[in-house]
Image 1 (tube, one colour):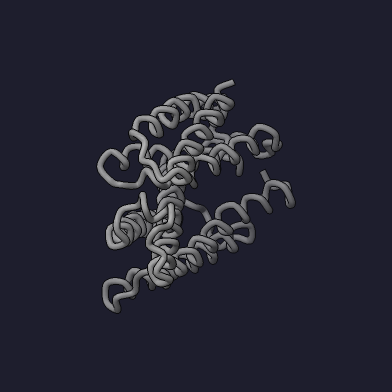
Image 2 (cartoon, one colour):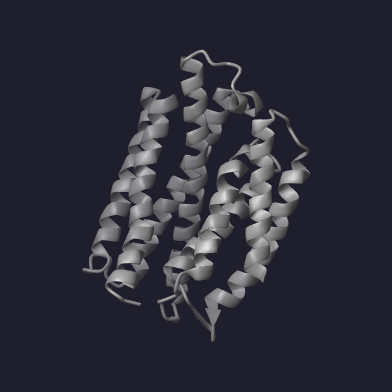
Length: 263
């Protein structure tokens, strides 16, 4: 029941955001935020009951995705109070609702485990890094759309008409990227400290892909601050880095849980 409430309210928030773009009309922010906040509360209660099992954590692929959805929406809701990022709702909310629908019907194969404090810190930082990188990637999509329309002299399109100026959007994109990069760096460091063997056979692919993603983001940040990289070029590099990161996160857990049946 709680999960259905979250799904329906997330979807409502996303549809309102999409409708505002289609009609080129800016609705009061509370119209978008209120259903998202209700959904976040229901999602929080559901996560507590789903993830906490007999004093242990069930960190399955689906639960991990659900936590990422929750973190991403929570960060967006809090940040939107001071930053013009409510336009991300039209991408994030429908996608979050879709992932939760998947979680309703897909089997949970991972068994609950007891984790050390260090591992809990590593897991939390890692999931938060993924969540912030999701926001940076969504911001990059909007920047890419705006930049593409600008280069083609399409100034009266529906999306650009309700977005902040491109310069402001790019600044937000790199702010999120820097925050995500710091968190990802911390996740790699804590993983090196608390994970028993990051180069073990079942972890080597995740480790290598994560380091490749880190290298992409590091290169982009260096190129931005010292070589002036921006716009569509920067957006596409974020796509590439995020692709490696998402395969490292979701791909490795999917293979372990659903193909190799390593819970």
